[in-house]
Amino acid sequence: MNQIFYRRPKLLNTILVILLALLSCVYIIPSASILGEDALDRLKLNRLRDQHAAIEFLRTQRQEIPVDRPYKDYRANLHVHSKFSHDSRGKIEQIVASAKAAGTQVLMFTEHPAPHYDIFDDGHQGMRDGVLLVPGAEMNGFLVFPKQSPRDFAAAEKQEFSDIVCGRGGLTFVSHLEVRMDWEINGVTGCEIYNTHADFKDERRLLSSLKNPLWLIQAKKMCEKYPQEAISALLDYPSDYLKRYDQLCQLHPHTGVSANDAHQNIGLIARLMEGDKVKIENPLGEELLELNRVVFSALQSIPEGTPVGTELFRMQLDPYEYSLRHVGTHLMMKELSSEAVWECLQAGRAYVAFDWMADATGFDLALTDNKNRFEIGSQVTWQNPMKLEAVAPHAVHWKVFRNGEMDFETNGIQLSYGVSRPGVYRVEAWLEIAGKEQIWILANPFYIQVPSA
Image (cartoon, rainbow, N blue to C red; front, side, top):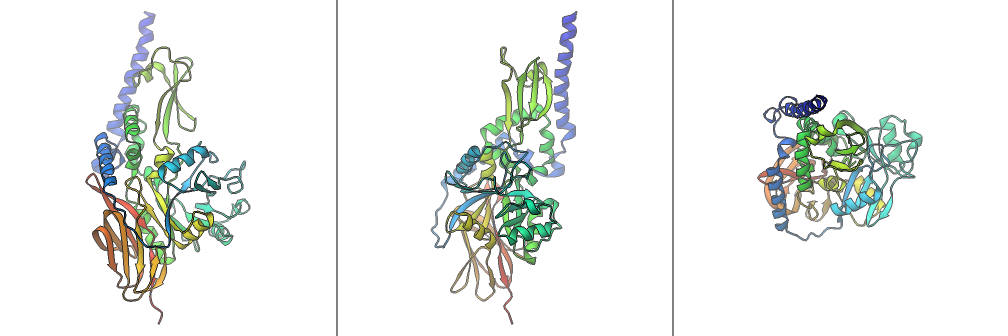
């Protein structure tokens, strides 16, 4: 009799967990027909497999087209966190190795400030294994890359704060534009035009699914088989960011950058504990809940004799390598140095690329007249004739925007567009991946001014 009553609660718990998981699929997660296609729709094994095959094929179609230009393309990742930040455990050796695997030459860190370290004096900086490290902070609504510690003026109001940082030779970028659409900061270096974490926050059905243990087990298999395609299923065209960015660029030049917001802190880990308990924790080591061993075994078997402390399950959604490869900010510089990074970002000589689809190195865009070549970010006076000329290592769908409105589009390896009037012009390149067009490259604008009387 005692055995029967001992088993029945375990059986009921198991049934309850499964029923709750199934109910979460039916009632908690809004239907795709209401929200349109989202990350959860793209996180299907057949979709990931088709994407992977398309990307592998695309690699064989790459065309290297020589371009005569004065700068070399260096790939950078901005908005990166390490174990200095309270919400990351990333060690610098691991982050640098991941950057090299992702094809990154510049890592620009944005740690959360804390009393026990100084983001500038103690931050990661200098060359390490061929990667340039730049110390910085995510603070006061900005990505901050100072030339000295910002501690003494950390409490300053946002305009004053940016003025002090930039006045002392540093850089400031408005971060998380989705919550700062009304900001107009005079003299700011620029702003994010894409943020991975903001992309993630919009995925309501995915966020609901992360509470579903049955889905997590299925997703773990997909993430292990197609890790890059899985994290990049988040990608949506950043229309809200770009709409605001176009408005800001008409006020004064803003350098647009991508924000990886890389923490390596999204996922779940299950460990066997004493007393036939299973602890569920996040990658930061914070306990989320505790399950009975029998309940957990209904989701994933635990072999007899498994030692206490054994990791039973791990699902990491944002490993550094794949987070850094997802998107990068390409800097056009003559050398790999901190001075060159500063000069480049201040000049706006950069473009954002979702390199998980294809390495964008080889992309080139310039404004030309009869005599001169002007680089991305240039501020020039309009004259007739002028052309925007671009080339990419893959055939793309080109879009040219003037003052935030699409002015021209075409297809092919090359773009040639006659500029017939002043305005703020920027160019996008879209790639077809597994039958679907996706944004690949977002270039910083040219600021073409009205001729003086």
